[in-house]
Length: 173
Image (cartoon, rainbow, N blue to C red; front, side, top):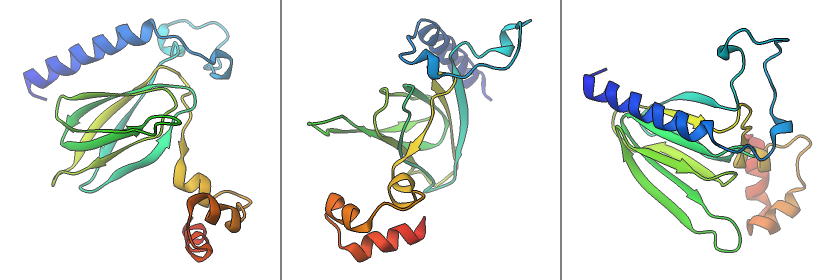
């Protein structure tokens, strides 16, 4: 990594750590702890924080999903991502932004969001969460790939689709 990027990542990580250290976990009982009787160092317990490194190939995506127990901060390390989220009822406002290397974006707690690589090269980002167990619910696979399947008549009415389209989608998951 170049010096400027390394410094930027260090500053972003320090800011993130400061934010997350004071973050409130609305469901602390739902978090799971590392199974250690007496932690001997800080690395044995995530202290309510987790992160993931995400690699996106060109046109790759992290499809619409939400985290039921966390907000997310995304830091782009390489490439260009289109990111967005949808606000809750009744407004359903779509908020999106194109992010480039060094940009940071916050996805609010439990709102549906996505990322897609709109660049011509690979993209890399770090996703950080204010929960050691943020959970993830992917919208399409949850709705069309449930086990047992949701009645296609119900889904057809709910999504205003032809029943054959719903059955096709269910077969894909």
